Amino acid sequence: MTAAAIVPEDFPWFDFSRYSFSLGLSLNGEAILSGHSASEYDRAEGRIVVNGGMAEQTRTAYAKIECILAAAGLGFEDVHHLVENVTVAGIGDYAAAEAVRANIFPSSNPVVNTVVVERLLRPAALIEIEVEAGLAAQSSITDETFRPGYADSRQAGGLVLLSTILPWNREDERVGVGSLAVQTEMIYMNAAVILERYGLSLAHVALISEVLRPEALFEYDEVVRCRRKHLGPVYPAVNTVVQRCAALDQEVLIACDIVAAVTVPTPIDPGWPLYAAAAVTPGVKAGGRLFISTQTGNDPVSGKQVSPGNVLAQAGTAYDNVNMVLNEAGLTPDSLIKTVEHVTGAGLESYRGVAEVRRKVLSEPYPASTGALCFGLLEPRMDFAVHATAVVGD
Image 1: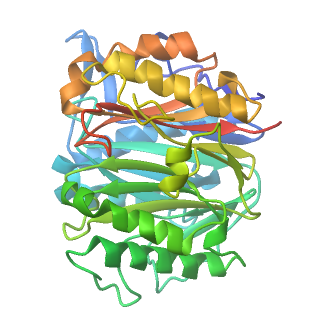
Image 2: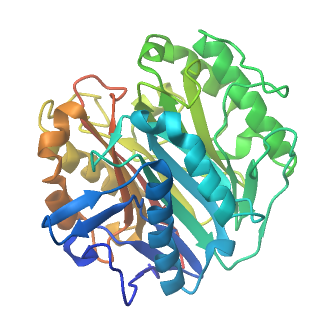
């Protein structure tokens, strides 16, 4: 792998060398950053703190991001993709974060994925922001009437990134209130409209990241049915978490972040039949990336929960599963460029120990990483999940 850790000469917020993740990775002119909140070390208190309301926290997060990008020879004008992880407690103040973003990106219009999380690892944090940027030419074909305020999509290399897709029609009206099936159908229809502008279809979808409300779990078979109906022949990698709020809009049962490829994706399957039954592929190669579906403490062949109640054992199994997909693709752990970890409230007390699990199974430079609390996962009694992305080739 040609990725290198981005190491600013001066990073005044905290000593990042103590952690088992990178501030960000530089890869062939691109930068993939970890999630950054307003956390900083307070010498007087002798600990990491988070200060301020939503606007101040957002400005601090972007100050960190600007520092890291500069160390990679990039700036805000090079950013093409943002993920804003917003806590349930921060939803009411999200407009303040949007206002800060609008000042930072007045015209470059990155793709924005807004993900509502139960909480961030720092209890006082309201927002954590992930960024991808690059010097390579990127194009955007945006219908401003469909998704005003920022780009609804952007092509970056061999990928087309879509901003968060919600079950709204073209008149910005909610569709299918109370029906997971109708909402999922609407999301796929919206995605198809966007992809058509790039000459693509839903057959090019490589990755879907789903956020579900808890009550949607009882109808989740409807999501699987929609995937079978609209996607394929290569089913995407799928990441799924359960949150009290699937989106800023309280009526939304499911929200999706979608990545497509300019060519039909290539499936990577170590021989896990349960995935095909759910219209999911364990790993998908697309646009120079390998997207790996959510891994937990479940045995991927039998589906058996091998370590319920033990977050560290679940993390070990999850990363073992990730490595099996990497191996099937002819890759090794040093190919990983990004991980997103979710832990439930029940598993939070033990989560700090997952850092040592990462040190044992990952290689330096460590991937960019983000961690957040979720309300739950698809598998009951599971308290840890990891979503992983690797780079394919040079």
